[in-house]
Image 1 (tube, rainbow, N blue to C red):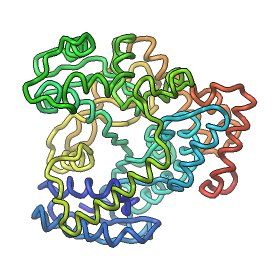
Image 2: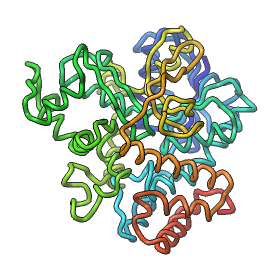
Image 3: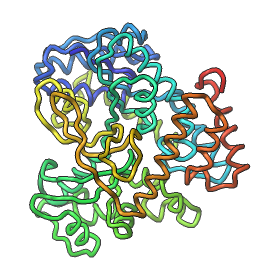
Image 4: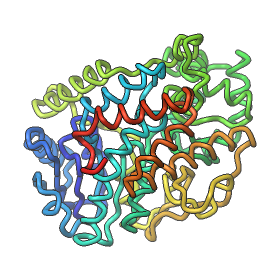
Length: 441
């Protein structure tokens, strides 16, 4: 199998993805191609692939290039881990809306930051998809880049390439339940609907127990910790880390299953001056300085992996690239949280909109499950965001600036200011990130 990683110089993503691939026996003999517009990290990443191949005893070859078409030629899978404009563009996604009184906890999925990020990432991913239609038309695009929903939808709509969005947020929730209850993640079964970074769990089974009964005990303070619980796995830790989602679960009867800092941007009432911009809910506003510190840690980690100062990972990372490919190759069936066009699995959302749900994957690819509905108030929140996302996709694909401004105005977070201010903010965001936009914007 030829696996191309676009954004193959990513210090954040490549180390764990490669380790997962190397621990997957069905991928023995794989060819990994690392492609990036920045050539500087590529030699180190290629060295890591070679070291991982030797460490895990997995035969593999690696090459690297800055030529996208060369990389994609004959690929079987294309993993996308890019961020158009990097921190310089992301800084504008946060700074410009803040001047208009809008603060964002992440700024990469919805709200003004998410929409602006879509404007510069959609053309890049569609360009990859168009090259794939020519050079590897049967390959899967495995997208890890945000905003995941609109990017996956855009590639599907504009190119017809088989694109799927893979997000680890649901895996984190499953692990949280597993650690809380002292079971394995496979013992946690979720029923899911919604969109990326605002998926809604409508039912949970933890072994033979109703997971919502467990949540009630956590909220009430009656849950009995497993004997080996610690400051990370105790009920108190679970409650502290998930204040926003637990409050919404109590209100709706469905559990939003992404990190609270993502959830807050879908419901702007939680990001207000009165709440300390989310602090009251344990939500931290992720700054560019935070991201730069994280990036320094990722760079240092790669150095340590290459020098032997850090042992290669022994457990699965929680990312789904390797398991997804293994299902295609071996026919092993797994149920995964995937972002795919709606063919009825999300009963509250329109056909073809990209939705996040639990999907069975086997040799023939993903097979979405039965229809799942969310409680009415939660479903309405998701419908609003899905409608805005569809508008963003159409606006960017057609370079319709007026339609994009309408999307800003309808987004609950971006549209919390008056319509004239929304239009000015949209113009300011596009102007501030013009260097990373296609000509014509």
